[in-house]
Image 1 (spheres, rainbow, N blue to C red):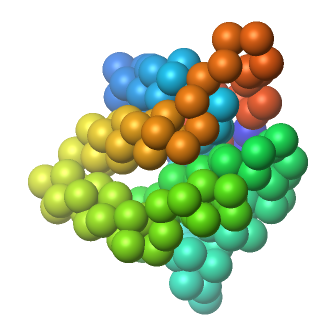
Image 2: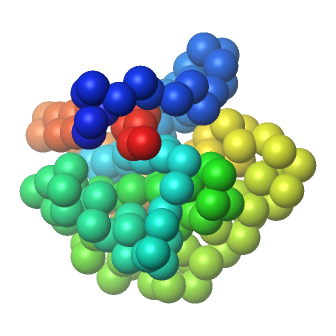
Length: 153
């Protein structure tokens, strides 16, 4: 999704890196009723990363999941900012300390300039937490949100 279609979208990842992240999203969602999305852009100007993640979360209508168990991984590459924003259903289960731990581990990969691997590993960890609290139900589960990476400016 390109918010400004007249602007050329910047390539953040190679095709292989893009596949790695999408594969992690799909793997995570196969084990849970929860949803994970990744949003990547260049800049997070004039705003705290968690506030920007929350804004994007609601802009993408991620709060519409039945169990309020969607999670957004937000990364502003050039500004070197990131955040993980979980809806109220999953946040009540894991709390702020969990999100801080996931971000810290993602930063470890980012410090080695391995952004795609860091994002993919973060998504897998989020999938584990979602699976524990919101296990997959073959009869009722449906993919409520797209799995592709959303790119901003």
